[in-house]
Amino acid sequence: MRGFFYIVILLVVTGCSLSTPGRHELDRARTLMSTDPSAALSTLNQIDVSTLGDSADVARWALLYSEALVANKITAPTDTIVDIAIDYYSRHSRPDELRHASRLKALLRQEGDSDALATALYLQKEKEFFLYRERARHRLYLAAFIIICVVAVSVIAWMRQRMKFQIAKNDALMAEASGLRCEIDSTRGDLTRLETKLHGILENRFALIDSLCQTYYESQGTKTERKAVVDKVRSEIEAVRADSLTVMERAVNDCRDNMLAKVLAACPTIKDDDYRLLVYLAAGLSTRTLCLLLGESVDVVYKRKSRLKSRLRDTVAPVCPEIMGVF
Picture 1 (spheres, one colour):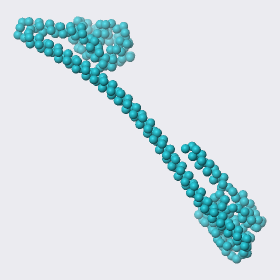
Picture 2 (picture 1 turned 60 degrees about the vertical axis):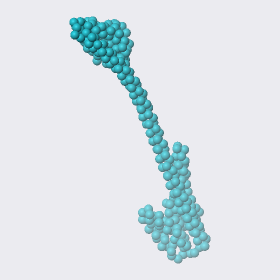
Picture 3 (picture 1 turned 90 degrees about the horizontal axis):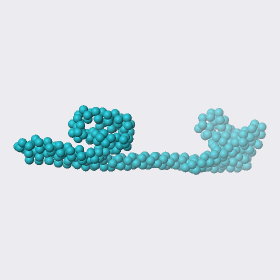
Picture 4 (picture 1 turned 45 degrees about the horizontal axis):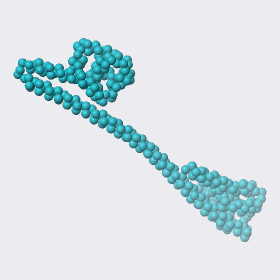
C-alpha cells in the first residue's frame, strides 16, 4: 500500500517536471517579436509542440506562431494553428487573447507571401500538435487509471481494516460468550449441588416426620402418648445437635459462596461455640430452634448473637460483607 502511493507520487512529480519544457523559448520568442520577427518565428519553429507540458503552453505557442507569421507576412496554409489559440481562450474565458487571436486569423487569410519552406514547417507543426493531442489523451487515460487504482486500493484497504475490526469485535464477543458459558456452567454446578442438598434436607425432614407420625400412631390412645412423642422429639433434636453441624456447614458454603470458609480464614481464633452458633444462624434456624440446639435460654442466645455480630463486624465484614446478613 505504501509502495503504491510512492509510485503515484513519483508519477505526479515526473509529470510536473515534464510540464516546463519550451516555456523559456516562448518567453524568448515573445521578446524577439517586436525587434526581430524572423528570429522569433525561427525560435518558435525550433520548439517541438508535442513536448509542451499543457494546453496553456500550446495555446500560447499557437498565438505567438500566428503573430510571427503575420509579422513576417507569411500566409498560413490552414487555420489549424490559430484555431488552437481561439479554442483555448474561448473555453477559458480570456477575452483579450481571444480578440487578438481572432484578429490574427483574419490577417492570416489575407494575401501574403507564399513560402514553400514556411509552409512545410507549418505542416510539420500541425503534425506535432496532433501528436501532442494524442499524448495528452494518453496522459488523461493514465491519470484516470491511476485515480481508479488509488480509489480501488483505498477501498480495499478500508474494507480490510473494517474486516480486521469486525474480526477483533467477533473475537471479543466470542471470548465474552465463552466467559458467560463458563459462568453458566459454574452456576449450573452450584444449582446442582444446591438441588442435591435440598433433596437431602427434604429426605431428612420427611424421615423425621415419618418417625414422629409413627411414634404418635403407636402411642395414640394411651397414657404414655404425650411422653412418647416428647421423648421422640427430644431424641431427634439430640441427633441434629450431634450430627448435623457438618452437613449444615457444607450446605451453607455451597449455597452462600463459601461464607463460613471466609469467616474461618479471616478469624481463625473464633471459638467452637460461637462458630456453631454462626452455622445455625447462616442455615436460617429460628431463635427457639437455636435455644434447643444450644441448650441455652432465649436471653442468652440473644446476647451471644449480639457479641458475635460485634466481633465479626470488625474482623470479617471488611472481607465478607454478606456475613452481616445472617444476624
